[in-house]
Image (cartoon, rainbow, N blue to C red; front, side):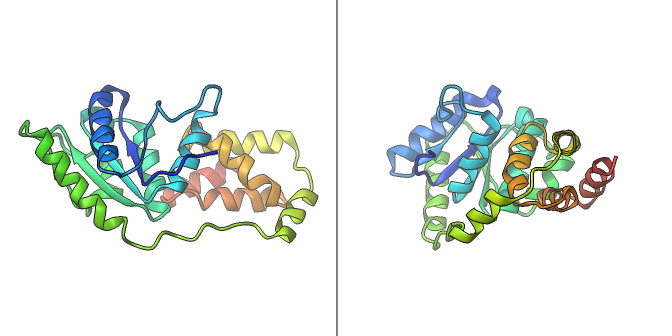
Length: 218
């Protein structure tokens, strides 16, 4: 079960001290945060925990540095946040050029710079930017109807080797999150082709979708 929260903190492990400072400040002001590894339970699947946490959040705060700029995991988190319609707030702690992969998703976002050492001041700015975003009506969660649940339970079992092939192909684009996405979409897919199409929709980049579908066809 995911605890209620407003903000998902995306950061490189190198910048944990900054993520912790942001989390402490926002939570002291009543803004609930989800941050790894604090909010990942023992034995919980890491990728599944991140996906579930992001689906429950309304804002993603990116702690931007040279480390997060080069992190494939951070890129996947930002990409998923954009796909899910979350507000993305980059909080820059290091003055480095934006990588091409991140630029695709956040080049038009409002940036908050924290480069001059006045961390308390910039944390107040971050809080003041987040609060209005939380006033927007939250997205209504989609709860499967009983008929849908029954249909999922009766869905045909797909061949394990075919599922493994799709997971491997998707992992080349998304990393470990692929395993959770395959498990999530498989019950509702009646054919391996339908499952491949559902998984391809998780990829925002057209080139990545084509590469995945080509690999999925073997």
